[in-house]
Amino acid sequence: MDPTVRPPLGTSSFGAGLGGPAEPARPVPSRAALAAFGALFAAVVVAGVTWAKWYPYAGKLGKLWDTRTWAGSSILGTGGVPAKSGPSWHSAWSFAVSYGEDIWVALVAAIVIAAAMEALIPRRRVARLFTRRSTFGGTLIGGLVALPGMMCTCCSAPLTVTLKRNGAPTASALGFWLGNPVLNPAVLAFLALVAPWQWVVTRAVVGAGLVLLAPLLVARLAGGSTRGDSGSSGPRAAVSELFEVRGAPWRFAKAVGRLGITLVPEYFAVVLLIGADAVLAAAAALAVVAARLGRRASQLQQLAQQLHQELVPLARQARLAADQAATEMTRVGDVLGSAEAVSATVDSASRLAYRAFSNPVVKVVAYGSGVRGALRRLFGRPRPEATPR
Image (cartoon, rainbow, N blue to C red; front, side, top):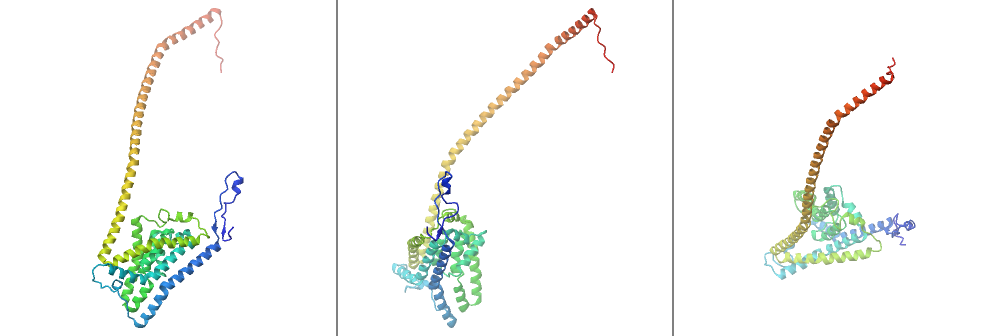
């Protein structure tokens, strides 16, 4: 047996001796293996964030400390394309290339960290960390965990998707996604060096309110729960899923491939649209929203049809049952009426029999008593006297 795993209690072959089939031993990672995986994941996180964020931000912070002047420019004006130029493939491609050169390091680090989480951390532990008694508590945990990352919304998306996939509630995942760019400590430090203090306070207060309140609203509208959402990504599925130590490399490779295939093309398409023209980007966003709303509407229509197909026969059966019950009640009423009539007839017959036989019986008894007294006197037998008491 692999020394890194141990069979859980109650999964031995002892059950076969009692007549039942022996349950197969499910390999459960030992504490040493989980601790080693946790340390490896922490090392991956620290290395990735240092490479992508901490080291570059430290250099920028040192320059700002010396100059107290922000030398950056708007990202919408990169690529050598004027801001007021019309939509074209040249502007779209130039903006996409320039934007990719700025964020590719952070995006690669985020994908590697997300894949390492998928491979090295059991889902039940992720769900346990982000699941709290209240939705507000889960949102707060998500925002606090996001502070060291300091990533933009694009680069934090792989981590957010992985958190949701591994059992984190909707509010916690949204708090993490919004907390990365909105509560970025490096941005607050930059503002403190080049802008008035009111800007820093405003961004911190508004950002904290956005991170803590927006996920609550979205989770309530989406019907989410702090205990996790239904489906394969909820905590129940996370707990029931088997975590094998030997499968860590395969899980890492599969997560990298899934995130690279699904997220990178979406990023590229969105960046192309933004670089082409903001109007086209807005139209594309509306088209995506309309497509999703149409899909939801079709799903609701199918659900309504299924409900109609299931409820109509049930209503018919209920109506038939009600008609049968009414018929049976009518029959029971008829039976009760017949029983009352029979009872009245029996009562009348009893009274008639009493009247018919009561007088002759009394007369016969009186006649017998007189005959018995006459016989006693005739044969001289004295009547027995009552003994005094």
